[in-house]
Length: 350
Image 1 (cartoon, rainbow, N blue to C red):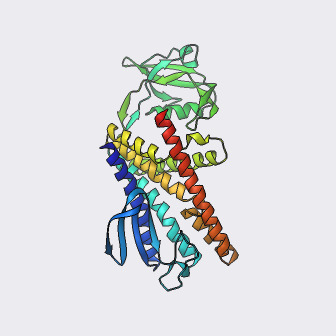
Image 2: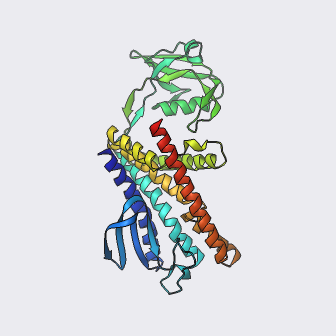
């Protein structure tokens, strides 16, 4: 069941990505010949609105084939009125951006639904206290709940951690212990910590870990919008940063995952409940949006780069350059997919 949900989620997100391209192309007056979810042998197809809609055997992607655009042979062009090739660079960029934009919109919608469902968050309840840490010296104990820091109310573990990390000087803590309110003061110390990318960094800490206690986040309608916006922005920033670190070598290539990782993690999320599936689907959607914006010729970002060149220099890049870069783009893309698949298999057998 989990694997079926995984394929369904991935195919759904790809569908909305391609739908963004499709709607933008039709809005710009471009004829769309094929709308396909998946690659390889067609499982079934039908014709509607002048377009052939298909579902193919390999559900690892999709494409919208517009008149005059063929990534397998960039030299094939059409100059009819309803062709992609006759549109201005700005119009083409609009069509190209619509796919990734659709992924960000879907991610926002998923986070919005999650917020309406009152997601569970970690409560600021202490699990363990490290010996000789600031928290230990201040008398903090397991099961203490931190309710405020320097007069600011603390509702979640994340809020508490952010206040501590950004603090300067002593902190006045108000805690709840056995139903009674107590106050104490401590000063965070810099400690070596590992961030989400596995990198070591200095961070202000007080020497406590979470008890794993959670509570439902009850949000008003304005807060629901804020939550969805913040989560979408955070996921986008995280993935952009991760890609940048991977490209410059700050994150090892062995950490790159492929489609097997995506399917497995989605399957695991399915077992944890629908909220986890929505969280992971939103993250994958942002991932698709970000990765498609990379300036690799086989991706939307590569086509956007060519059109920006034409917009700036008032002429198209030479056909030879476009063909060679597109071939190079496919080599890079398949290389990354191969590396991700190799890493996935290595993790499975390891």
